[in-house]
Amino acid sequence: MRVMAFGTYDTTVHPRVGILIEGLRRHGIEVVTCNVPLGHMDAGPMVPPPSVHPGIPRQRIRHARCIAELVAKARRAPRPDVVIVGYQGRLDIQIARRLFPHVPLVLDHLESVDDVADRLGQAAQAELRKVDRIEQAAIAAARLVLVDTEEHRRVLAPQQRDRAVVVPIGASSVWFDAGRKGAAPAEAAEPTDGVEPTDLRVISFGLYSPVQGAPVIGAALSRLDGYPITVTMIGRGLQAQRTRDLVGPNAPRVTWRTWVPEAELPRLVAAHDVCLGVFGTGAKALRLVPNKVFQGAAAGCAVLTSDTAPQRRLLGAAGLFVPAGDSDALADALRRLAQHPPEATRLRAAAVALARERFVPEAVVEPLVDRLREIVDKRP
Image 1 (cartoon, rainbow, N blue to C red):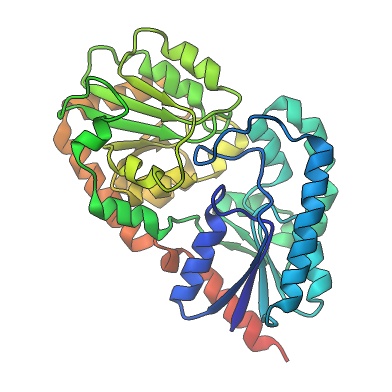
Image 2: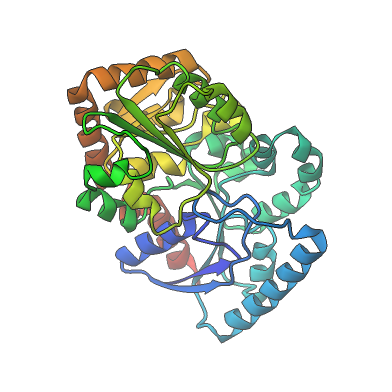
């Protein structure tokens, strides 16, 4: 079987497609890539903040150039048995359909238009809803639709659910490598002055969006004065300033970083004891398991996140949960871990053991591999 990973996806911003590729190859499947990264304005903490917004005309010119290069690459590539269109490929899949009219297409559909509106806030909702027809056409063009949780599958229209495959996000090998190597305490202490070896080291990274619930983290951190806890906060976004304001001036043991180079982030996370997940209360926040839950566990951190159905189902006893949106409960959980280091150690060991069994690329793609083989075997 030859699979083509196709589209304008960018694995440095959204690692999902890279994990799919890595997992399929570990199952012995040939994967060719046909990729011209477009880049996105919602880039995460691994990507430097843009100094100037490119504007709609420049985005369209850049998109047109990427598509032209993508088409040229596809025409030179060997013919695939299946084409997987990477995340945010609503337009890419229509190009793939024209380039490969009789080849089954798979759409990686991690986020609907409504989910994007929920993530970016009310100001973006009116514009994003205009894209709904494009999204529905993309789903209709796909033989299979990849989602990351059962809750996301249920959001699809009833006639689309039979074509949906739940493939958890997982973590790439660099995160497991960082967890195995570990990091010296001095490396963890580097960004924060006054870190003691006995401090509970906590990290949060990602966009400061309503989904993440960063203000919940900020309010919780404001209640930790006097406890042996140091915190690293990485990211930017709509709620960054509000989060800083909630922390207030009485939290000198919090370090703020706008971005971290992609190559450095796994090692930095592995130098902490606890990785915070998401704490938002919106519809999307209650349906997802974010990248950082998989990545933090793979890097050897205890995972502290909101008590939602998909996260509890995934992590079970290997996670520590608090009610979504509850900053008091989050502060209490951090205080307990700081006062009981053996519990933090136990959670770290449980998280990494679970990650090495179920979050590795070859494990998360197993449902996809089964469906791909069914499709290819049935082709005349």
